[in-house]
Image (cartoon, rainbow, N blue to C red; front, top):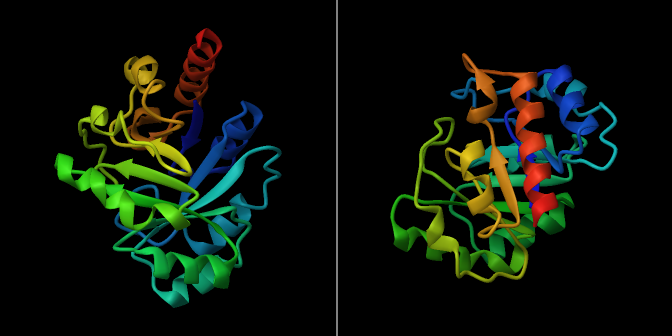
Length: 205
């Protein structure tokens, strides 16, 4: 099970993730409503940190073409897209901006899970998340248990340490943010402890 730590906004957080083998580092680029939002200039500095084996992910909520163009200039491996997408739109984005794609399916009801079918072919990763954006809302992660897709499966939405063992049976990647914060600020000790727990579960499996 791989790990994505999302909503990074300071060098110490990024370096902690990289030095402890986090697979994906996520940055909130165009959603200022989130307390995890980083400006373009700040993102540029954070993304200049040597990432070693980590992958850098730009999180974009319903981005315009202009925003995609702007953020494509950053040192990003993936665009993580929130919005209403289909095969054709994703083909165009991948071709034009040369980024891998994480397509987000926001889940409130079980039927929402099925939306992956219209984006599966062009998505490198499909992320099933809550409808809460910056809020860590829960949903029934078990709903994706039997889904098989071409790319990798990722889960977000109120991910906590006590759920890791179970989630390792459902998904390829977990995406965590809120559980690593103290008073809405990333806590380096919580990041390290969470990474330790993920490694422990991977070792057991």
